[in-house]
Image (cartoon, rainbow, N blue to C red; front, side, top):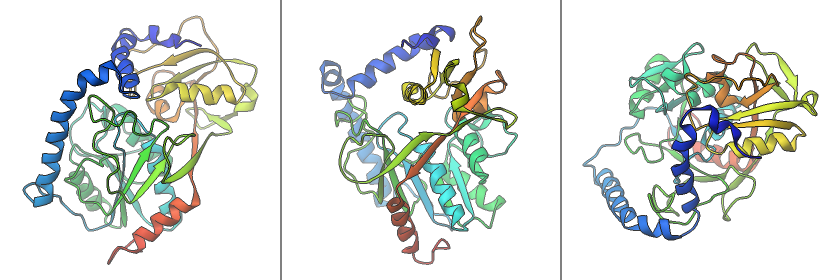
Length: 346
């Protein structure tokens, strides 16, 4: 089914077309990748210089007083980091630990350091931090410099025992104790650095844990996870509607994520009839967005989209994603935390 929704968002479809072509080029070493390859050499040199400056101490990495877990990736584009962050936070909370989260808050319209509260506007704090706060209840702070967010979090919540950084694998100014690198089904793509390929840095690289967030890992090694839609869709007032009750009823599906077709495919696999699909750019702010006219069918969206969409379409139903890393992943994470000298998380 074509992504009909692109025509409902002004020039969003046209803006995303070049990005889509580039992402397709990153899967193979074709003509476009070869054309961009010289630029990737410059990117590699600059990145390597920056990392070396941190290594020799010319650029300083700052350490905070509690263990820091960084969840990130080495490829451009979404790889499922936010579900991993939420899974890690819930696991540590289940262990009885007080956990905080820091993030840059990608796509927000503000540029300061601030706490993400239940009533925060996602446009001020970012959609992913707003979702993490709502889904886990953990204190969340956003700032361009994650070390600033970490310090503010500890000042406001001094009982915090562990900080999880949403993204930031390449944000070397914040010293970390555990690195979790997330891959989706793309793996490392064509294996080249930006812009000729999807890699932000070389792979393989030293990393504590590797987690595959997709259904078909592109390479061996690391841990896997299961992904499944929740049994119920959630309304803005908290009421739940079983997905099975929507089977056979035409619905509209909307997703403003890195891979919207993955969400649409999961809905179809649950037996839902998608009369229209609306694929929007990742982190779309929904400013000025209007529901397609003439279609009064139920509107389904992702949890990430719902934190912003509900302000414009309060009748939309969010379909949560249940993301569950294999038990061995959490066992390895616990062992790593326990090995840290003087760690409050041990």
